[in-house]
Image (cartoon, rainbow, N blue to C red; front, side):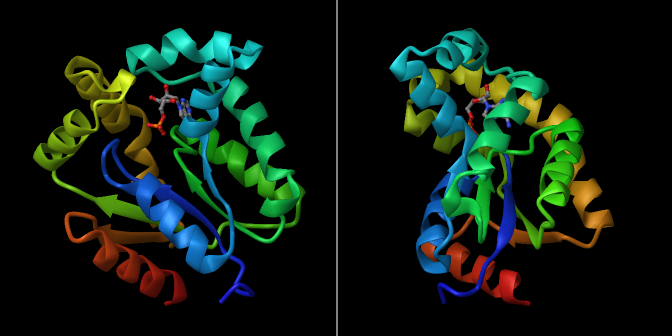
Length: 188
Ligand code: AMP
């Protein structure tokens, strides 16, 4: 299936499983899973200038500013492996970022094929996130990230639905069943 290029966005609250699904799908579809959160965490670990700029923001559960994220994503999409497709995990997260993504793709003569929304009840999200116990996953931070998701990112659901790109998937199921549903939705 490696010849089926796909350009998709994985949308969902923190703890919805979009990172896990992006990785699984990337293997099957032969395109990179691009996680902006993972890229930023890597920068923080490396202690480079990007890491220094985003460390505090990430620890609080707030969003890194759109201009800085545009730079990060633009550079990543220009790497060779993203040329024939990608699964974006954690970007876009604001309507401004969605507009940026559209122009980045337009400049390259590309467009989005689909936006996959992983639907998971709030109670399950909190349980999953607390169980993950990453450094930025303290319960207070988890709740803040959920609040930020509702306020800043959830509007993207209506935005992409209006453009006919949204594929809503029940994410509260066995991991492999979720992957299979997404694959069907991407082909449909
Ligand atoms: P994630 O692993 O996607 O949950 O991202 C972890 C943290 O990185 C978020 O809580 C934000 O602080 C930051 N981050 C990741 N992606 C973005 C983005 N697209 N826009 C702004 N901040 C982001």
